[in-house]
Image (cartoon, rainbow, N blue to C red; front, side, top):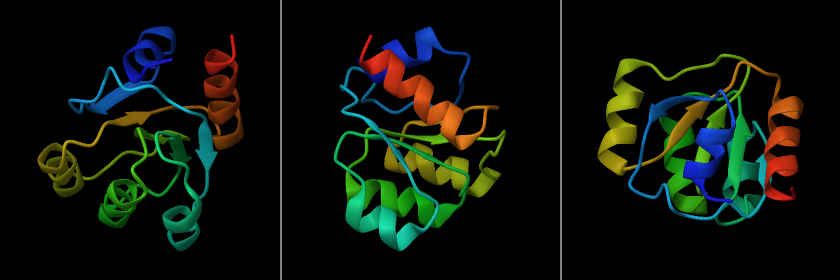
Length: 111
């Protein structure tokens, strides 16, 4: 499943659309501790977190995740949105809890 497919099949809000929408998502990854995410997030995963800040964007780039999904209605502030645009990072928003968001992504990937 691509990021574009994920957007079409869910009601996730697109906070920033990167140029990688045709990239495949390998699996969901849940973590709110940035140091753990930096070392353990699988490449091309959909990183589900509630950490909506500049550091999250930096970790996403370092870990080479496909996209960030901010769960529980969390969003980025204006400066972070601008940084996501500059770094070409796809950031989505879900109003569901972290587990429910990741489970939905997992189910869609494996459908």
